Image (cartoon, rainbow, N blue to C red; front, side, top):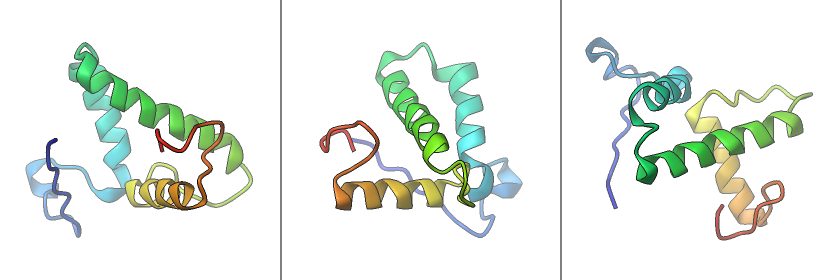
Length: 93
């Protein structure tokens, strides 16, 4: 297991790091360009992107920013608590 630290308030912006508001977009670009051939990484990225796609239909008429990593993680946490995230079983959540 690896540990990832995400610093807020633009701490990494000057070094080219993503902000919370564009974290998912930058992660997807990194994945598409550099990481998609690594099967160990690919499965996790695809799971996140598939989850976002599933949520897009559910939240089509709401004002939820699915491109914001904090919002997305909050939704996943809530899904875990209520044991429901689309058609997924509890374990993958």
